[in-house]
Image (cartoon, rainbow, N blue to C red; front, side):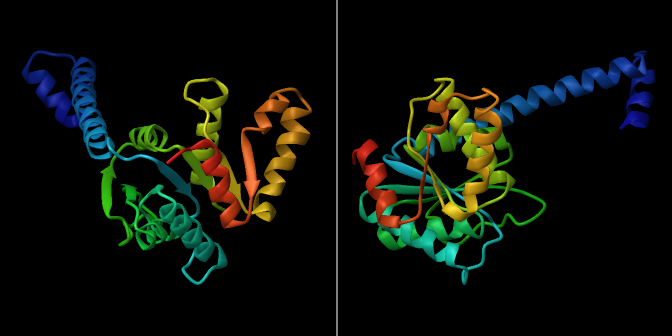
Length: 230
């Protein structure tokens, strides 16, 4: 790009550096249109989705794993109680969430994003949206979900859960249930939050109350029903 810009810049009597800056500015302008297009597409396709629950978790979980089957059960029970299910649209826990939603008769939504590893659309999403930008995808998760469920997962799961907690803590969005499933999986994280962040007064005691840890699928559904009326 630099050599090409240099030749074109010379041809126009323009310094190389200035030409590169102008070219990047044009790219940024077009990127804004792409971002806007993704937002509009998401708003139009999800505008009537209510009530819905977003389920997050590892893409690496296999169908034979216990966590996969538990996710299917949770999503199915949510669907049978009138809740649609939103996932990241990929394999593992996302696939299990979409599968359970379809089995339960609710809308099964997959917000897919292209990644170099792991992310391939699963076959159980009845409504699939494809995103290029992570932050646009996050807007859809937050805007159209009335509750978050975090199954065991990695960095992506942590990112989504803590994003929601931060928005609730700072009152940028209305509070909604944030549930972590799997006491054994999450107890180390909760212990660290208490021992490090709370003890150092980096967070307040009420911040910890924004998260509920549950294991039983029926308890999870009943907890959401107390806050989100169908």
